[in-house]
Image 1 (cartoon, each protein chain N blue to C red):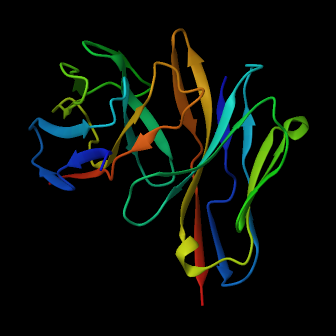
Image 2: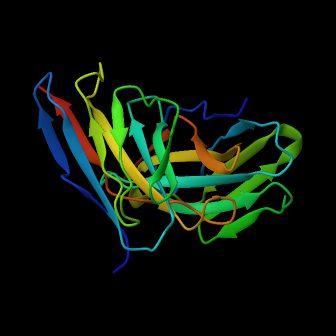
Length: 116
Length: 115
């Protein structure tokens, strides 16, 4: 079975604090992709990162960084020096294969609230 | 600008009525998807289409129907058989039949409320 777990339902931090959003996944596939999306109040999902199962290198993009560890089936997302504009719901997702189709399986999301 | 357009942004429906949500993309993507979002449940797949004139049920297809007569358009009909239709609906598209090498692009969503 394919599953993505985001145990943190809601996180509140004060601006400039660092915050880590956890993502744990389950899959029987040996080749798979993991994603993070941001959902601001406007509603649309904004793509943040894609990581394939063969690349365990950590990635940094500005204040964002991602830690992928196959040994623990985790793909955690850290925001350094958080800002109010980071307030959103963040989703972790996993590609799921069904025959000729590939579908995204989403976690339940983590709502991040950054206050002044 | 290329993108996905969902309309309307807000929709109200009386119980027992069918309603159709629009999704149009000008990204020349082959694959399109409909997701439903409920509080605390993340996104769940309703239907997806890998190519024109073909579509497949997702995890929660009961009470919904779709069509894919044109590459650019993938409308979703919420029928009266859907027992709990009040939700936020998101449409997405991706380049090819497999998502492995590309991300999905999402529309801004339609919030449906049954009154």
